[in-house]
Amino acid sequence: MEIDHGDGPLKIAIRHRQAKGDAPTLVWFSGYGSDMLGTKAEALDAYAAGHDLPMLRFDYTGHGESEGAFKDGTISRWLADSLAAIHRAAPKRIIIIGSSMGGWLALRAVQELRGRDDAPAIEGLLLLAPAPDFTSELIEPDLTDAQCKALSENGFFEEHSEYGPEPTIYTAALLDDGHRNRVLNGIIETGCPVHIIQGKKDEDVPYKHALRLMSHLPADDVVLTLVQDGDHRLSRPADIERMLAALANLVEGSTVARSG
Image (cartoon, rainbow, N blue to C red):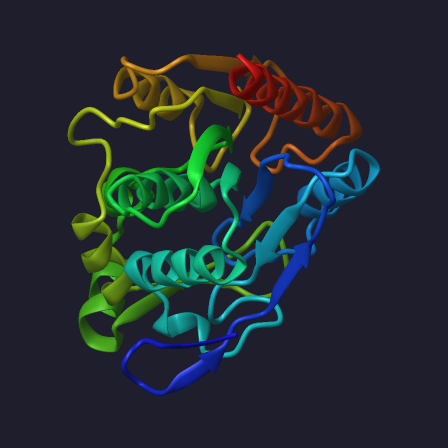
């Protein structure tokens, strides 16, 4: 599918697994710089195939198989990509699984979809090491003088990545746009069960950030699983099993709610 953010049409890569039944569609939201072919996304797709569940996954512009430059990305831009992909797939019911930045985008997507008459029913959220508001809460407070200078003079700064050979880029546009998409500034009403899985040894998103997120979800059925030796990736076999078990509970809860 194509999307135009005002600077020309770009193709967004989508993989949509169909299913025969009336189960909710699993929707995968990747993390910052990640794509829909990562370990967790592939495990979810295999689970969907084995349980006859529909699944939607996609790459934001500037990520993976989608067109566009990564440096042009912002939270608003990637949120628009996500909403467009969901609209294109047109599921009636969804369970969103968001990893890291994908957790932030998932929460923003819920806020946007809950106000639309033609939106699917949101029946569960599974957030893995969620990083809501990470630009203002986790990056900006620790900016060095050199990084501030790079942002001012070049519009971006780079830092070493633990997840690949290429450095991670953060742009001034991303940081500025992050303020317009904050969710940790009031009550977050999802209207559905929420399960958060967070590693206590996560060096990118401290586990206390997940605790803070929970304080903004007081009206919802929220479960937090803290993994004592878990890191940010949460991609070890035991982490994958934990993720799939949490997802199974959300799917079962969705089925029970529909039948009741």
